[in-house]
Length: 72
Image 1 (cartoon, rainbow, N blue to C red):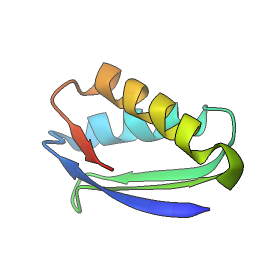
Image 2 (image 1 turned 90 degrees about the vertical axis):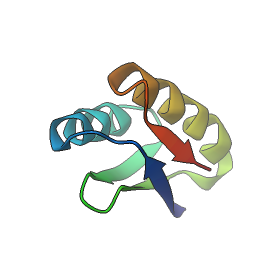
Image 3 (image 1 turned 120 degrees about the vertical axis):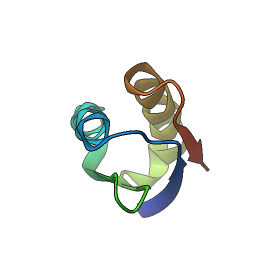
Image 4 (image 1 turned 120 degrees about the horizontal axis):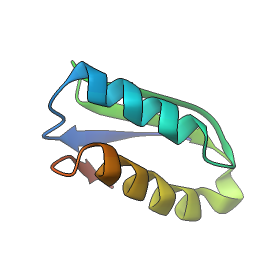
């Protein structure tokens, strides 16, 4: 399953790269991309465990960029 989410208050391209790398390390994630310019995040992951994966994604993103909000 592939889904795209809007990001609010992603401050820099470096943070976007850190978020992308951290998300790719989560079990079940096949691919991820975080675009600073578009303020969007695309996650490709196993559909059976997508909700659980998204909870981990939110945690990881808050560690990298506490002000960034993911519109689920």
